[in-house]
View 1 (cartoon, rainbow, N blue to C red):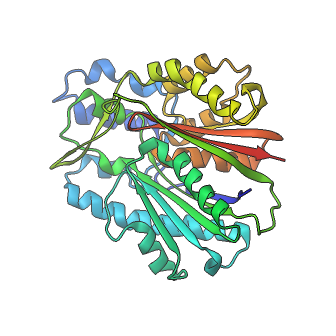
View 2 (view 1 turned 60 degrees about the vertical axis):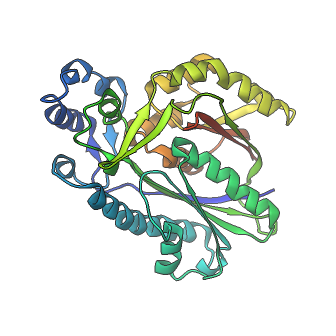
Length: 350
């Protein structure tokens, strides 16, 4: 089966204390959003301590246009993608020309040609690399990208697949949007860039972190739960307070059904590689799944130290597992995204 050879993530230069973000948000919103003073507690309740930002905090209080922010997205995404890819290549010891496929995941900026093409051009990778840009999967994109990358490697045992996820959520902030969703979003979302290399069966496997299977589910009549509303000013964030309810109602049964197809049950999962979403989402997972102990500790640690980086977050969790060590057995990657949808990948660690 395909296997994960390496993961690299980027610690951005403007990591910011959540209390500083809280103070700036109050100053920016309170004049035109009377509820700001009442809702400011949301920043404390996230349990986030630091936010991973691609710009200094002062940038977000200054006037800018959607065009300016998107241009920043393209340049920053390209620069840090290359950094993450180069680190990933160094970890695996491959030649950059060995890469056969690139999947690029993002939902927070627009570029045509897509960023995967720009990465190939800047790094002078093999010009015949197969390209698959994946856009619009939101927080579900990291796990969905992992599933698709492994499917490619399963189809071609000689494949060396590069997965890159870039989310610069901070650049989507619309300062003139005085909605509750935008205010709450400003307490959660951060920036993240990660790269993963997945190899096919014909390559030597030293770490033994193998792909087993994946599952993707779209919940009917839930399109309004999470997403973007595209406006002249940019990407207006939409998400519902019903997300934890969805998790409580659906996720345990969905996981049980997925595992049962492979002769497994929840007790067989030793490594939970979950996208955090936020504190309420993590609490919902704990309540719904009934797993003993702090099974989401690694996920929680990443959220506390980086914030919600949309699709890239789960790859930061994966990187932490690979750096600090898996428990032998099975691992489950899981994230929820727009649609409303869930994405799962089953791994086996030996």
